[in-house]
Amino acid sequence: YIQGVETSIPLYKTILKTDEYKNGQLTTDFLKRFGIIDRLKEDLKNQRKDKQLAAIAAAVMYSTFYQSRVKSSTVTNPRWKSRMDR
Image 1: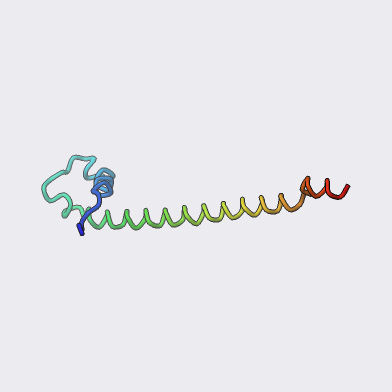
Image 2 (image 1 turned 180 degrees about the vertical axis):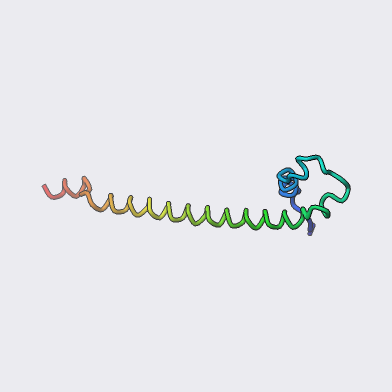
């Protein structure tokens, strides 16, 4: 079993968003001096919340869509039933 960081992309995204990076204040202690790891943790927590909210919104939208489809299919007479009544 291999354990460790899956990808460093979230770290790079956090670094690229900082004003310190944009202003060229890069040094060997950049991560520690500007609290990048704490910022990364906050970014990841926010991403998790965003994904949860998106999942909830998708479930609500699907449920609403499904309910409207069920109602519309039960309101009208199916063709086979109207033909059987003849």
